[in-house]
Image (tube, rainbow, N blue to C red; front, side, top):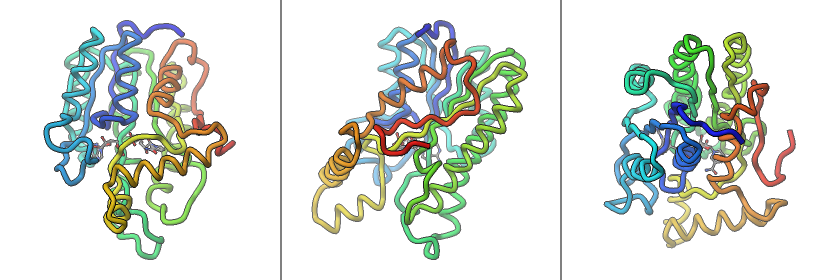
Amino acid sequence: MSNLNGKIVLVTGAGGRKGVGRATALKLASLGADVTITDVPRPDDDLPPQERGDQWNGIESVAEEVRALGRECLTIPADLSSRSEIQDLIEQVVAKFGRIDILVNNARAIIGKDRVPVWELDADIWQHFLDINTTAVFLATKFAAKHMIDQGSGRIINIASAASKRGSPKSSAYCASKFAVLGLTQCAALDLAPHKITVNSVCPGGINTDRMNYAEQAEADARGVPLEAYRAQVVERMNQGTPLGRVAESEDVAHLVAFLASDEAEMITGQAYNINGGTLFH
Ligand SMILES: NC(=O)c1ccc[n+]([C@@H]2O[C@H](COP(=O)([O-])OP(=O)(O)OC[C@H]3O[C@@H](n4cnc5c(N)ncnc54)[C@H](O)[C@@H]3O)[C@@H](O)[C@H]2O)c1
């Protein structure tokens, strides 16, 4: 696969210790790209246990890892529920690096409070999922596209989900917000195709991240076990239910993102690629 030397990348939601955002930033940097990473500052209670206190410093910790690879890394804290912060984010990337070649829309609303039957789903929680998982992807695409059109090239890669393709119980807000990403991906791909800008989604099944999940926290508390131990049981169950024998690691997703960002993928646009070890085929 060709390198990404000289490419300028923005990855959202990139502060997690085992997250897809971090893995993607490191993968693209290892291929030669300079990277901007962003995330929302979160109180300790909203972080997974492994990221609380001074053991992990979010995007600043990831930036140290990127710089150790010899690439530049700009960190920008931003809340993607704010339209103006998303616009500022894109403008700061272009002000610093002069362009934006690859946008990876990875952030998502912290899961858990949405995990209720549809009739119990709070309308504000619904709106928050739409804001972070869908509207922020649209706005980042809209603001970055203008620069990519001027450049005559660009790659937009949206981290969607198996939940973009198949509904499940107690997941109305998450699934609706992720289904919408695939519609946006197809339409934006068609709008931007004349400008040689591709737009694609990747759709992971379960991933072995230690992302915060309020529902898993509540279940761990109810069982009297630490969240990390409960999460390990969840991952083990998912491993057993996956034909290839394990759920994806964040790095598996990052490899697919890197391919979609590469020159070799220039004929691919509007697609939604599964990465799930054989659990879903459409
Ligand atoms: N983890 C999984 O099992 C899984 C499965 C399928 C798809 N995905 C998708 O992969 C992507 C990454 O998953 P993950 O588990 O690494 O993510 P995650 O749940 O840790 O969230 C990613 C980041 O989004 C950030 N974020 C939350 N609210 C924000 C806000 N208001 N403004 C800005 N950033 C905000 C978080 O701080 C976090 O660092 C997501 O889009 C997710 O939907 C994950």
